[in-house]
Length: 199
Image (cartoon, rainbow, N blue to C red; front, side, top):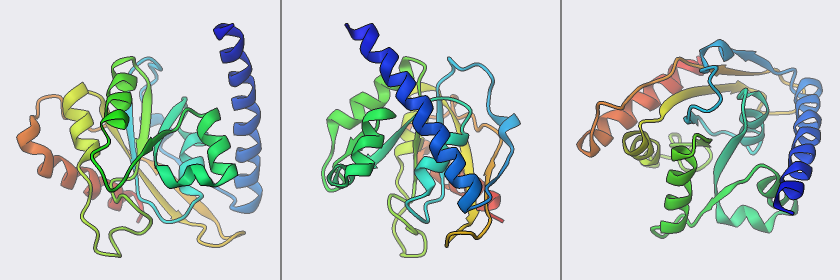
């Protein structure tokens, strides 16, 4: 029964991903750069980290990341029928932002250790840097804990429909030789790479 359920979920995922890709191609004329930087071994866990400007950012990464990606998202998005549906289809990991969410933490670590890929926004919220928000250390923590490489992602343009949007994937960042004492330094390096890709 579980195999049948997963089969249908994969079919729905392909349909939804294709529909989203067409939407971005028509509405935002999306240009994708740097996918050659993404490791070809699809069993290798990766952490995609991008800048966050609009609600379009998560699905854009999902359909251009060259593999199945599970997004970390705030729990409140479950109240939106569309985002709740996308969360089910793409295996979203929901996080309680104002609490130490142990369940989300364990789910993410397990996913990476099983060779899955996750995506998150270190800013923690849309336009976090502009708002003066402190950059979150989640990506750095997961990279150190699991040895997964970080793929920096820079998204620019497309603030309004029919304005061209560009998404750039940078070279993998390897922090496997770092420790928990280096989280600040790692987070800074990740954000530096993301910002560079938005230029």
